[in-house]
Length: 279
Ligand code: AMP
Ligand code: ZN
Image (cartoon, rainbow, N blue to C red; front, side, top):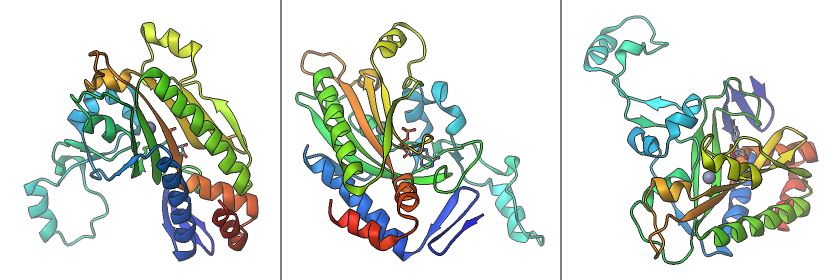
């Protein structure tokens, strides 16, 4: 249990009061503003993702450990529970129906699924936020939550367009950090996005696929991800020559930015507001 004047965290689940909500809202507004330079469409997607859709993105070959399945209770279980006298503390496995849905672990998957089978003739930009869930082995304060808020900005286009987009955001995030006084190291992440084997793996080693803005050596607060044409291929999103499009995303974890601000300014919220207001 992590409890202070402003928030409480227990089992990786955070409760925020009004002072922190103001900061989280300001951070999100800053990231949305950043997306306006590319006239990104802001989208809201459902809170649950279909297992079938995630499967089409090879999710279960790559990230099954992060998955959290959602399912209703069986009719028998409902019958028993309504008449049960003892307090219910666990829903047993055999009382749950098969699950066709998962909680999202990243915000951007929905965008590629949304564009399935489309022909994209010029670069498209989106932004979307999601309450994400990751089944991590342990949770730690604001740094590693079970449920957290992710804002992403996404580019779908040619390889050059996506790389230009990522390079613009690398600069934008760096200058934002400087403006608000957070010190990040930019690190190339070693885990390649999706494709672990095959011919693309070599390409990915030569060309970074993920860079992270890391606070105090361990906490990645934002990541720049180059997916090559992985999602274009999986979702059959094609350009006007019939080739699969490229994609990339910038992902911000709101609570980790909050963590970096609180650590940098020692819970002095007035100073934090001052910094955020000047962006
Ligand atoms: P990733 O897709 O792993 O690059 O995650 C994108 C962003 O989400 C990271 O840069 C973090 O800011 C945030 N994030 C990822 N996992 C967690 C977590 N367990 N708790 C809080 N924030 C997270
Ligand atoms: Zn993403």
